[in-house]
Amino acid sequence: MDAKIIKAALADITEEKDPTLKSQKLASICSALFRERGIDLIVVGGSAIEFYTEGAYASGDLDLCYSAESKPLTLRLRQELMGELRGEGGPRSWQVAGMFVDILGQIETLARTPFRKLDAPYGQIKIAQPEELLVERVLVSVYPGENEAARNCAKAFLATALRNEIELDWNEVKRLAERSEYRIFPQCKALAKEVADELKVQSPLHPAG
Image 1 (cartoon, rainbow, N blue to C red):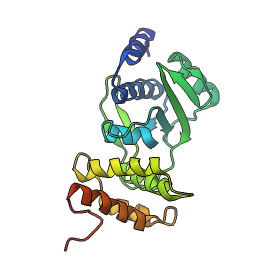
Image 2: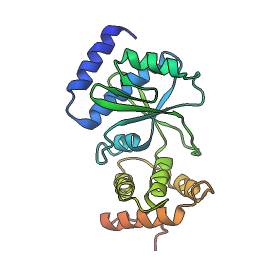
Image 3: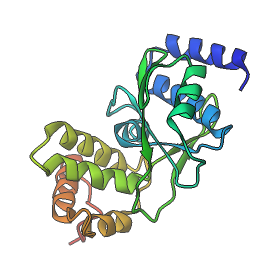
């Protein structure tokens, strides 16, 4: 990637006041740069939920993984690529343009739904599947103990979905939540009903009637 493009992008990201847009721009330039070297980055965790909820939940940093189809991402290559973005730190966490960026490793997913894609200023972003993000967040909210921050995040995500602002495959949510790796469906169902009742809508995880 041309050094002038990177310089202009970093200046733009540094000056961006909207935290969600700032994070999306940073994900965009990171994805574009890594893609040129055969590395397919995916936004995960709280960062992905922030993008889906358009900032209703704020992560504060940028969490990335890379796909199983990517070329090997060695520590040296991480440092070289993040160096092009003037990143400070490493080998898995850097500060870039006033934000922290974490590259957490190869993505682990049990979801059958595809990664979502978002057009952003410096190139397309891939985002982890919302169905698995929801199930993961509910799991974290109750195990190994109650986690109020994770619960609030799951509620914000559910509210966005129940208002039809993002499309969720609720059958896939149920399938994932019932898998032995999660075993969290009763808690997912209860939280979905709680949020649905607050919004005065029907929970997709509860039969009508």
